[in-house]
Image 1: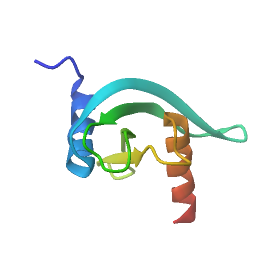
Image 2: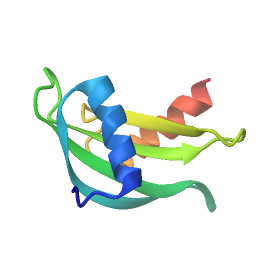
Image 3: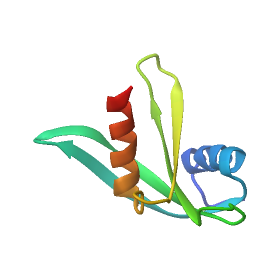
Image 4: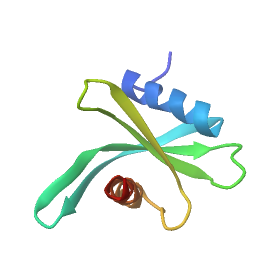
Length: 98
C-alpha cells in the first residue's frame, strides 16, 4: 500500500499519463499574490520524471473549477519555471493571456 494520499495519487496518475514515469518528491504550499490580492493558493506536488527527454521534474496540482469538476495542472521544470512558485506564476500568467 502506498503512503501517498489519494489526492497525490490522482495527480501522479495524470503526470504519468502526460509526462511518463515519475515519483513524488514532496509537497509545497504556495500562495501567489497580485498586489494585496491572493490569486492562487494551494499545495503544489513536485515529481521527479524518470524518463522525460527534456525535463528532470515537474510541478502539478489539482483544483475544483467553477462547475465543480476537478482540473489538473502539470508544469514542466524548464526555464523560466524552476520551482513550485514559478510554476504557479507561469500558470496564472497563462490564464491572463487567454
